[in-house]
Image (cartoon, rainbow, N blue to C red; front, top):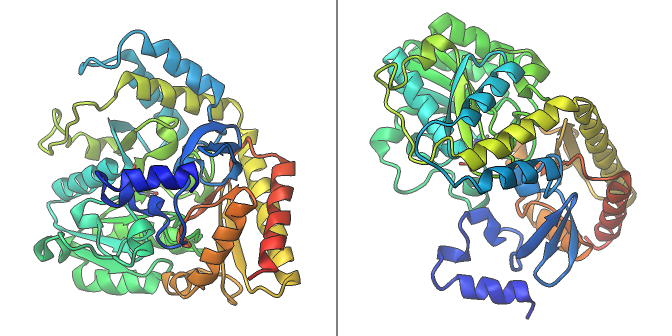
Length: 427
Ligand SMILES: *Cc1c(COP(=O)(O)O)cnc(C)c1O
């Protein structure tokens, strides 16, 4: 038994399923989760001293590689002053200013501790601001695990076949209208019927929790127009895409201005941080300025803020990183397509900036939830197992996006393509 297997067995005694977040359990790809003890640039080292080229990056934050020194040093510097005071610190303002500078649609923002908290608070705010109850989301888009948003969600919920979770009261779920991503006509139709009751549309501007699906031309602009017409709040959930597909997120990449934005992952530099922000007029409804309540004992924690600030400063200081990430994602996905074709494996790919998708399908391009879920998940499981043996760590679910890091070298990517070529021959 490997040490990872031993640790996983021990974990099951007191931790449900042995994990603190469901996809980590490897249920959909088979085998036992890998326990890591160290991250270094593009690599992860497991408890059995195996090294992997990592394409998960802690699910996004490690865009500049693991143990990125400017972030580590910022945390070290803050550490000796204490872990938190439950009172304001200067670094909260510095990080808020930086986010507003990078994303001009954000005029004010509030820090929280996770992406889930950010989206949950943003929809409460949208409801409070508009005085409306209904919200619109898209099937396969994941916005964290709060009740209203855990209806037909993607990611882990989708991986485990539980798109709509027990424990969410029907009386709450009935206010969540779920439409088809990339299908503007479905949104127009719904708004003709109930547009005046809809507080917000929340969308992942690039869907990253049902693999990696880019918005089709006109989709995001169409949502913007509909929200303007019905005075509905447009929320871009950029927890994943923020600072990843471009420095200014998907809103910069596609040139669409949302009313509210939710952030997570990269904004904490690897520590637990989320944020939601946007138009001043809306953000002023939040307590203590306004009546919509939201709070957090550990929100704005100094260590997390220092990590986030160092991360955003590092990214803003090297804007060329985004072109490089896109070039790497392109090289990887094209290389994988080429070796798949050579092996007679039907496959499609997608990428934008530091996000990429691999779909086992004979479709040319995947643009919908229906197409994403029609992909061959059994083949993905075998691919995942094979790649793991070759020292390539991919997300343990066919419905997760791949994450490229600035630390990943050309040689790493070539090794990954070579590994894929080898594994494809066994499928
Ligand atoms: C990861 C993610 C979330 C949830 O963030 P947590 O920090 O896991 O709560 C919400 N929305 C999107 C788009 C995400 O990718």
